[in-house]
Image (cartoon, rainbow, N blue to C red; front, side, top):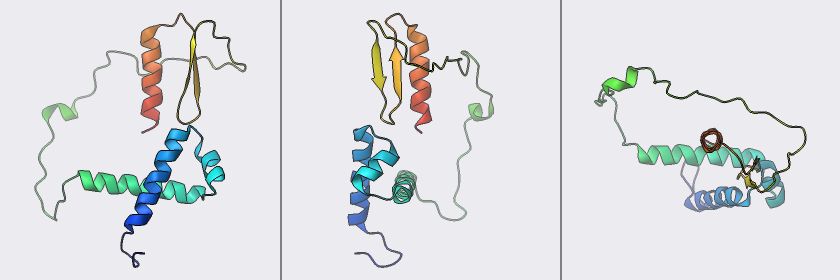
Length: 135
């Protein structure tokens, strides 16, 4: 076990495995933690902590007064609105029948029911928005 202020590699491995199992389970965080008898608060702490450690590891260490390169000229330009930023979705109180369509179950438990005749671009936009929501 690591001393106070030191990282415990065994604990980090444990929580990385827990986060991976939860993602693969398709359960909500609450349901997963209940089944595994884990504290939900600890789960969220370690998810945040490990993400921070991963960011630290990916970014080069900089010391005080280090040179930061300028952003590219395009960084300050507003984005070009080639497509709408959102599309309105109808929320149904009861599941619609999906005749010949498919159902997509996302890792966080959300279900996306897709009829057989769906606008492919709309489906791509919805799935892209759902994926961006996870970040």
